[in-house]
Length: 346
Image (cartoon, rainbow, N blue to C red; front, top):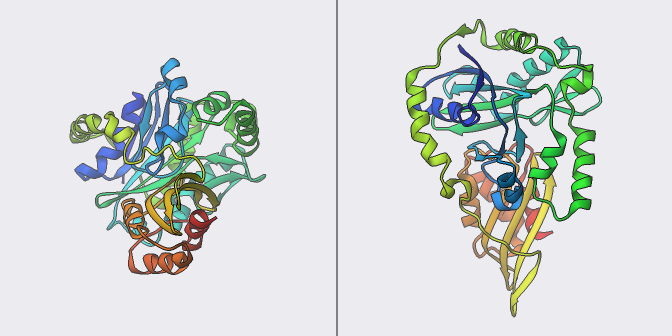
């Protein structure tokens, strides 16, 4: 397995690299950090609902939508990214996504141990301290014939900016978000009182990955990856991509005509926050939009699910969801059919 130890790179490149590698057949592990801050949202999220775009504009904070699921996050040079790109034929990529997470995140937990922070892998995709605080953000995507796992070592974190880039109802709610975040997300600096050097953090990370991948061969990122990044840049910077697919601004259970309501519901499943917005007419679902910070493989399966819900009776959701999962090759780690029933029917 090749190791691309890139250190600090342009913020946009920090995301485009792992999107480009599967498209030009380059396996490997990237270790890098962005040289300036930005906001990154998950594939299944609605940008306008999740991010305070006015705050980002005023503060010159760019926004990126990745092809990986999960939630919105503020990223900067205080986080060291690891990005693993594996062809689906690679033995390490076999099995379900929960097993993949465990294989590739246990070395990350051991890295924190080496830094003096007791940590462990916690299903579905978390690395947490002994006290249960999250200390690494991770996600997996399928891009073409490749599996991509991305994550980070959190040396330090700007909690204040993170709470300001998120779109929230009011300042009182923002205070609650800040409190919850500081209680449940920690950093290397908070745990041991200082930020180790780059080498002190990345050396044990590489060594622990080698227990899974074997000897990692240092390499230069191929030119074809950079060429593909230049092509992808146009897509990922476009408004069609950033604001794709869902533009609903529906209020919760807002009546729009006799017998017709626009319904918006939220449910927190173990695998992420699920959001459903749809028209409800005579107890039937129409024009459903399913968003949130969950993970779905393949990611396009959510579009198929939305289509399957068209005209579905609320009383038949249990059967519909069970059959949909049975008849489609779909994985939603930490999210089961009954979770969708809960978010749709309340």
